[in-house]
Amino acid sequence: FAEGSRLGTLGENIFLDCESLQSITLPSTVTALGSGLFDGCCSLKSVDMSACVYLTDLSSRMFRNCTSVETMLLPPNLVTIGSYLFGTEATSAKGSVSYIYGMTSLKQIVIPATVSTIGDYAFNGCTALENVVFETGSRLISLGANIFADTPALKEVVLPGNLRSVGRSCFENSGVQIIDLPTTVTIIDDYAFKNCDNLVDAKLTGSVAYLGNEVYYDCDNLEKADLYVGVE
Image (cartoon, rainbow, N blue to C red; front, side):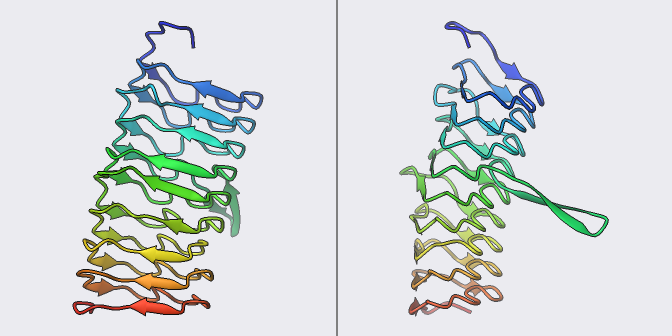
């Protein structure tokens, strides 16, 4: 985009199937992005939204089939990360299952402190994702369903200090080795860490009051789980 661009809104599917597009830097004036904006941009490697100070919402399914993205810089005042934004989605038709892949090459993501909502399956199936950083002072209080499921390269996540709940299957089939939950967490929903074969240490500090069904099911290498008074 040219210097001095006044662009405010990009509608739906604008760059749909632009298979040669490799990088994009959005101007600071952008305030809204449409669904499916980069769907099918299979050669896209770099997305820079760091100058977009007025952009607070990234809608669902904006980056479907963007399997080559390695660098993603989010808007500094982002509030909402939509469901399936970067993640893989399974669809079924006539008894067969097919997959719409997400960012399978993304290795690191820094989530701004302003983010208060992350939609279900946001990073599901991001198979190369190694590092998730929540900025200091994060406003996020809840992790929804399957957000980091099927992320085998993910080893350790330092969760936000005000987090209250971990959603259903949130880390299922991930590669996490250590989970150190903040003292504010009270709910860990069903299957949250199911099939986390690399998990060796699970620390439930503070006031965890509810552990759902099969939270640590099939965590073959789990050596230590500290349960404190208050867990039901």
